[in-house]
Image 1 (cartoon, rainbow over the protein chains, first blue to last red):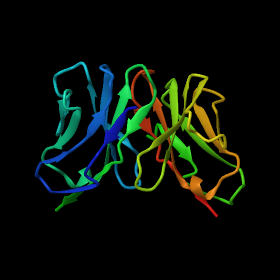
Image 2: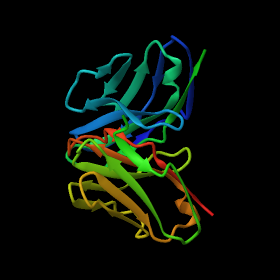
Image 3: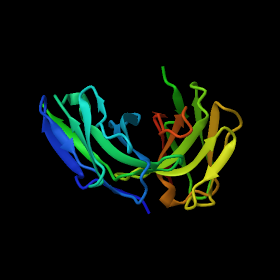
Length: 114
Length: 113
């Protein structure tokens, strides 16, 4: 069975600094997707970034980038130049290609300090 | 403009009293999802639709049902809510049938008295 683990329940970062959120997963499959979602307090969940397992290049979206280590089954999210608006719960998620089931981690709450 | 709209934002019902949560979308996406999210936990998929094809997760209780009368609307019916069903219920859509949930609604927070 596939699992997604986020070992950091909470993280803090100073405004304008860089923070890395960790995610590990377990699967025996080779073709899958990984995602990071952001859920601000009392607001909609937003898809932040997506990585396809067969692509070696790490995905990047503006200040958000990932470090995808397929052999180690690791998928961390780096947020550069952190802003107050980045404060949210961040969920890592896994999906086997061709299926609709997305397995979410338990989330990491990110606090951004002014 | 809101693209996935969930009504109501907050719903209170009595133990055992049926309740319906609604979701509408203006995106014309084929795929719609219902998730249950309990406090400080990850969202848990209950159902998804690809067009009118309904897919129930194996561990979704029978107490939960869903309807999708057309592309724009999807409903979650809880026939006999228990205290353990108190949660945030999230609706999401996806254009790509093999892609992730792309657009989420604000959610409906369900409380059980």
